[in-house]
Length: 216
Ligand SMILES: Cc1ncsc1CCOP(=O)(O)O
Ligand SMILES: C=C1C=NC(C(F)(F)F)=NC1=N
Ligand SMILES: [Mg+2]
Image (cartoon, rainbow, N blue to C red; front, side, top):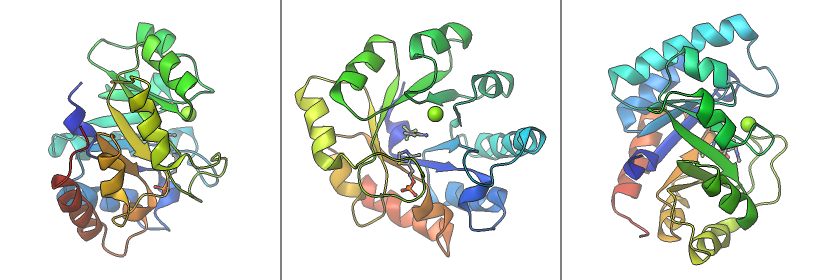
């Protein structure tokens, strides 16, 4: 997996846009230079199955226009049937080893981790990248645990975790660079772009901020 893809990894579902059309927000984010997109239709106000599929197809087509990877959160069937570029799973989902068996080998598998033990387990299970967080306080994910901060990333690198890592949780242009300087390969975020007055400009500012730094 190309770790460059993790540089500016936008995540969004229809309930993250404050009422704006998700396709329009994604269009702007892509124009602003996001390097990867995850469709995460989850939580309060998430779409019912049929609408979720319709939106998923539309967002995948948009990503294909920009040659940006399209990742699906949680829903392995949807990821496979939409021919997504990857799937992202959490600690409460099946282990990556089991998901890997079901997916075509071209698909990347990302795993959410918070602790060193979870990181080592995900690596052993064949994860292609790790989503580490929450980095900072966030109110986008209702059940987010206590933030791990930059130390959370430094510790994983000190522990010899060499997998591509993306930090997530409470990230915006003011703290994105330090995540990479702490050893991550990029940042993942929702509201800093999905709730921005001008999502394209927000993405562009984040992208240019990140183009100047590298942590390893
Ligand atoms: C999905 C997820 N996982 C850990 S924090 C989070 C939400 C991130 O949202 P935001 O970028 O708006 O803080
Ligand atoms: C809970 C999550 C944690 N990390 C990530 C990613 F940024 F993709 F790694 N996505 C999620 N949905
Ligand atoms: Mg999950």
